Length: 128
Image 1: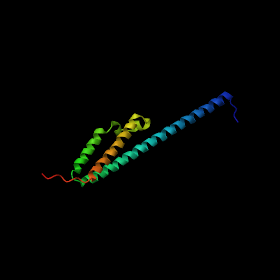
Image 2: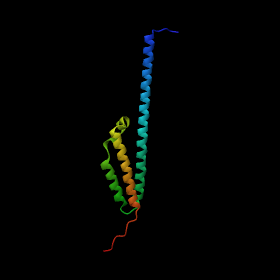
Image 3: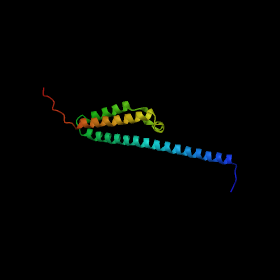
Image 4: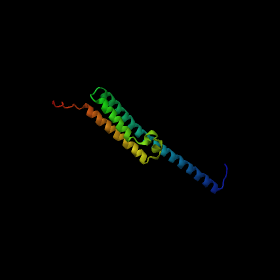
């Protein structure tokens, strides 16, 4: 067994603890990013499903094509720039991530509202 001075042994043990702490921090940060990414991905998949449903319903509805195009235009007008490259927002978990979640949630609600409007029967127009 190798004998080292006590101060060297303590210094080595502290370095090892520091390295383990850094690994733990990195692991936690990675898990946080994974959770944020999973949540945003689920929201985006939900938006995709809602858009596909609206597109399908709009194809067979009177003025459905017009509603579809208006919805797409509305979504594009509100789309945050960070949506094109969300990695920094996912990593930092800051205000940009909140904007992404807010936009995506609002987009889902808008598309659901438009789908609901397509399903509602229209009252007959008055003759005149």
